[in-house]
Image: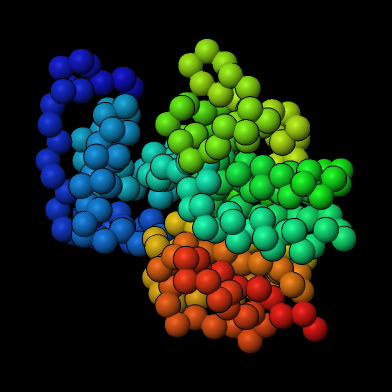
Length: 282
């Protein structure tokens, strides 16, 4: 049912503390992500937007809708796309990509498999592909790599596969790489097929890492994702990622996303600009 124009402008009551706890509890149960009190306004805004579209004005009724049956599963998928933060850009943290290119330049004797975890709209995945391509070009080698990119949001993945971006997302991309790996279109830029053909996008909830089929990875990027999880779950995620690295592989995290974590198979990278680990070679 579509709401009338007058109803659509009717303000909804603020979420109560109990309603916020119920909604944030459901989100953590299904995604692992924690919504603290500081994000109550964000949650309320996203819920209200969707509830207006459905003609609903009760938070508890909408909670029941997304919690029950096949219709609820479909509605949950729609809502999840609204709740997913997709703010990113190419080469978001330059020191991490400098570390990546130095690492890859020492691994020219084989093909590479890289993983962008929580890829959002794809900028990080394509940045990984650009860096891999640049290292192989400089070494006068044919392109021989693949990038896996995963996210929980189907809407984000559709945007990523489209590979089309506005000028704001390209601010950190130098002119030479822009000219080589993107071409201009009215209102934006599109990644060339040379790169898009090497990037595979797939839906993955990080709570289901054990079901991911990839192993023996040369590089895993997991940046700006762990901040949304409880400390114990961050450690659990990282332990599982460590198991997916090939000997000598590189795990790159967001600076400050976790402290005090160590894994017996990993060695910290000695660079204060980044938070990264390499898997010890047996």
